[in-house]
Amino acid sequence: MIISNLVGGLGNQMFQYACARSLSLELDLPLKFCTDTFGAYNAHNGFELTRVFKLNLEIANTGDLAALIGWTQSFPSVRRALEKRSFSYLASHRFLSESHLKHGASLRDLVRKGGYLHGYWQSERYFASHAAQIRADFKFPQDLCEVNLHIANIISQRTAISVHIRRGDYVSNAKTLAVHGTCSPEYYQVAIDTLLQRCPGAQLIAFSDDPRWTSEVLLPRYPAMVLVEHNRGVDSYIDMRLMSMCQHHIIANSSFSWWGAWLNPSPSKMVIAPSRWFADGRDSSDLVPEGWEKM
Image 1 (cartoon, rainbow, N blue to C red):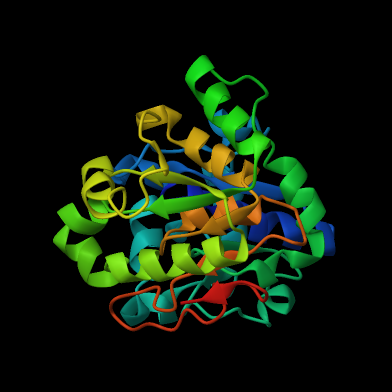
Image 2 (cartoon, rainbow, N blue to C red; image 1 turned 30 degrees about the horizontal axis):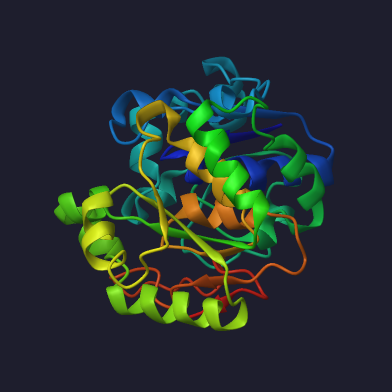
């Protein structure tokens, strides 16, 4: 059995699901998910996968965890401690904690007879061989409200470029800011100008959790840009859906817009991503897929 721990915002949950789902398909192992750590996680909108994508996930219980990694390590507080490097030596050999952000080629071999996955697994390389299945799993509900249907119609009528501006907790939370940082105005200007040169007349569709910043910094330079700011709280995922409908993408250092771009299946799409994903300098070289352009 494979048990994947789910935590973080929607984009992170999608990475965790995609990695585990691909491994379960490759190894023909049953797959369950652990959601009990959300009790100590107050950011974003909690556990969203089943609500957003209507996935029918099997949730692991204490007995499943105890059978896989031992009774003591089945408790959420113990599992959170074991992810820290200073306690990792105490973990069961089936407790597979991500030690860095680079793709771990040996993960498949380590989980061959089952394992508990604790990490973010932010690389397409973990699930590229099952990309079609992952896209099918991440199918959004059909209905859009009137205002979002209007945005979708704009996107469908001409070449559209999604521009994601992620600030929110990247700015308001000092710890998060120290890890991630924010994309600069210069990044957006160079990326936008680059794609507009390649696609003259394209429509810019901006998605932001900080519409004031976007209005003050980007709209004066790009007055024809459409700013989407109404999808809030539990409706935030609709921005990802609308992003995926655009032909080309400029993403932030955010797993949310990463998925907005990746869910566009077009082989001719152009995606520009920030060359520096983390402010603290950690290696993110496997995070941006081949074919996407870094700036």
